[in-house]
Length: 161
Ligand code: DQA
Image (cartoon, rainbow, N blue to C red; front, top):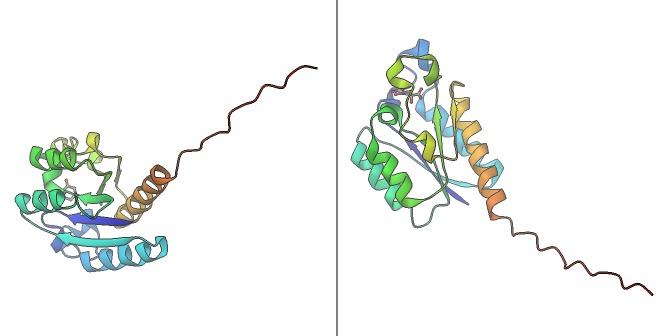
């Protein structure tokens, strides 16, 4: 199982950026935690960060070949990017959206996500843990959707004597 992990704009500054909201954990530390968890789950993760919307869109498109799912924190593009939403719809890969902060508890402009309704689910408000919960959720979703369908044996009616 191979998962593409995408971090959006300004997440490269985690650790120093608005610590009261985003905490003191750096992006490198989050990536190390994701890599460790991925090993436990026996999942391959490919982790990338970009400040550019187009680059994120291109990476989502490229995930069509070779990836089973996407874990994404679109950061500010969550609230603005129809292009990222459309890319997620176009590739039709199970996608989980994560946020460090609780976007519903912040400014009104952060309450809407263009990705949430096309994602499998959203994890928001648990700091770095949101990523780990998101990866576990995506892994569980992919595992259950991969399981072969149960084919129940045809029910034979007993013949009366
Ligand atoms: C964020 C929330 C967004 O509103 C914000 O623009 C970010 C980070 C989060 O992880 O809490 O950059 O996605």
